[in-house]
Length: 375
Picture: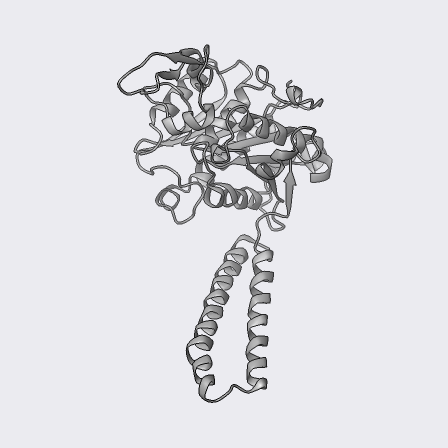
């Protein structure tokens, strides 16, 4: 089913729901009250119930067919000591659309396609799955990518670092280990993230060789945890006091009460007398940790961003430039924050940044990705 068809299906489902509730209202308000005086005939009541059942069945069936994903993957299923995490981490597989554009740049070894992991934002506290997750998956799918939306663990469910990094590293490894099944070139697995998700995909690129969390969980794999390309969009980058996004920092790092991660000392603005140490803030400030093998990076941000200070992206771009990392920084004066790939957002209507900026960059870098795995 093509993208436009899915949107029509959703509108039709909403219409069915509207009619369904009208029927209930009509039955409760008019027929049921009238039935007090003149009992409703059995045949009329039977026809009404049948009509309701048809509407319910149509609604359910059409809603199922409108799903953007074909498979839910519980990444921690069967992993010792991680069974309790199974429901909090889900990878949604959205296959390439049957009518996807013929983008030959996607094809790698033996005609296999590139894959992308999509990490919605939400201050590491919640996740914007519809507009940043599945809307992005539909776009990537329409261009022939195998898209995977990652519902990673967040602070809303009492998860802090390293849970988020574990989730994206496990997602990368899972996709590479099942590359044959999905028809994917395992050397062309990228990640896009929005806001806090942008911090996560950048962290996945930077921490691959220094913070591999999977062996600590007893997971032995020959596959790399490093994404082949990353795309932080209006990203949280820094954990520094001057430009850091405080909610994301608190959600990621949690409560730190002991040295060396915490500094003690009462302050008027810190009643409890504990603050994140300089070392901890530096470790998770992405602009301070760009490695020599950082994957090619696409950054997008808006100068009027009211949530994450624009300087976050500026500092990341400067750090990438200093290390001569292949990258592009797309900046707009207006656009705000949190637009994802929503077609009705101001910036999408004005710029179509995914078609005009992101797609040409992908066409440029994907054919030239190093086919030698990096561990």
